[in-house]
Amino acid sequence: MIRIFKTEDGAMHEKEEMEPGSWIALTNPTASEILEIADACQIDPDHLKAPLDEEERSRIEAEDEYTLILVDIPSIEERNGKDWFVTIPMAIITTKDMLITVCLEETPVLTAFMDGRVRDFHTFMKTRFILQILYKNATQYLQYLRIIDKKSEVIENKLHQSQKNEELIELLELQKSLVYFTTSLRSNEVVLEKLLRIDKINKYLLEDVIVENKQAMEMTSIYNGILSGTMDTFASVISNNLNIVMKFLATVTIVMSIPTMIASFYGMNVRASGMPFAESPYGFGIVLFFTLLLTLIVA
Image (tube, rainbow, N blue to C red):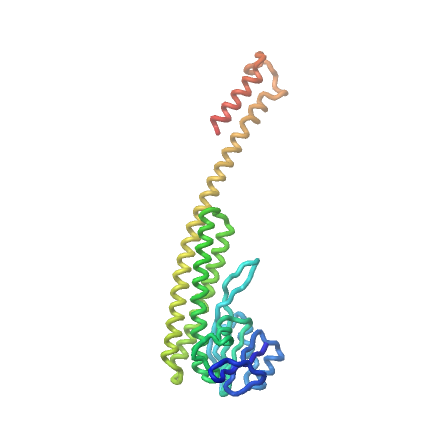
């Protein structure tokens, strides 16, 4: 999908045609849409396709007519009716007249600009726009990290009551999300450090982006440590409980085998002569009494 935006008179407007100073937003574009933008803006189609590969790494590539900035952004993926956090690539391509973004899916990082919810935002101020996108991306990581923290607290409360493997698996999924975040934030940090070496970049805005990115990295590391400790603790508790259950089942097995052993010993194939209580009319009752008594003692 191709959408074209341009700020005019301090407001965001969606356009039908590409104009100088406009922003072209590609969301999961088709092959024909990629070729259309590549021809119109003189961009290598492979650079437009790059963010469509989820394994693509963050980087900067400077060409004669444009510059490609590729970063990882946080995203929510639905699996088995539950939301999990992952990261996907997003490309920012700046040409002489326009700025182009390419992403596999709609993201809050960009919709905030489309809806006009970002102050002091102008599509024709391309360098400032890039830094505002990167800043919004860093704050989006922080927002999702707070959601992950709240979800982990809910799961921990469930574990205190149920102590099931299902809750541990959910914690493991959250920990995997934190690993994705850590890897992506570190890759983004390399891109930000490269931008810092460019003279025409606004250093004050870029430093704000770097600070937010570092804060997201620190929070990710802290939450990851907390989740690791929680999982180890509850895994030990569940393992101990399982051992107790197994010991109980072994005891029950022994107890249940006592009547069988005695009944087999006094079975119909054994001669009556010489057997205890064989001559007594109450022999069966006496044997049954001792069997129950022995069973209770073992139990």
